[in-house]
Length: 184
Image (tube, rainbow, N blue to C red; front, side):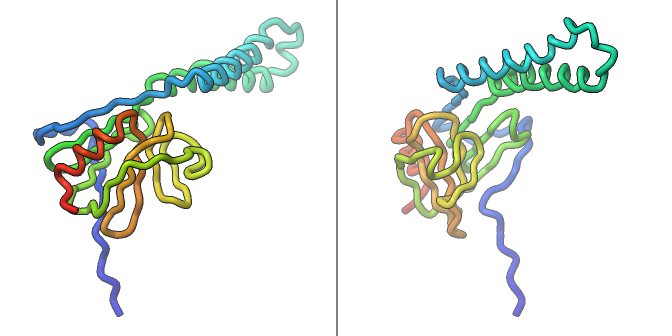
């Protein structure tokens, strides 16, 4: 028997593409938790320290490869990684033609979920570590999650059975906006 080709429930759209659909709700979240930045600051300073040490050693020319590795490692994890985390943002938009998710600069495209593919939309309290393994774009036993902080969000169930959790600082408003277009 032939398997009919299953239609994707979400599509990828270029970040720069013009969207003229009416915007009903927009939320932008960034990684701004104190504990996370404290850990990142300590580890970044350690990496930068490791990158600077070779310049103070008299044996710099004896271990050139090791010293170059330390310098590159220090620059990547001491400067580049914190900069990427600082500018990373999860943008959730409820528009008249679908739900849009953007996780810039991690994803270089937006994800569009048309409303006809959404079967259920509920506010949910969750444990980011236990349910999804942390923050960011995560895959866990309970489905896929897009989150940057907190423990509340909106759980979508799609027509193909896929579950997507969208972390939100205002999950009730987000669910209401999505519910405006999704007919239960």
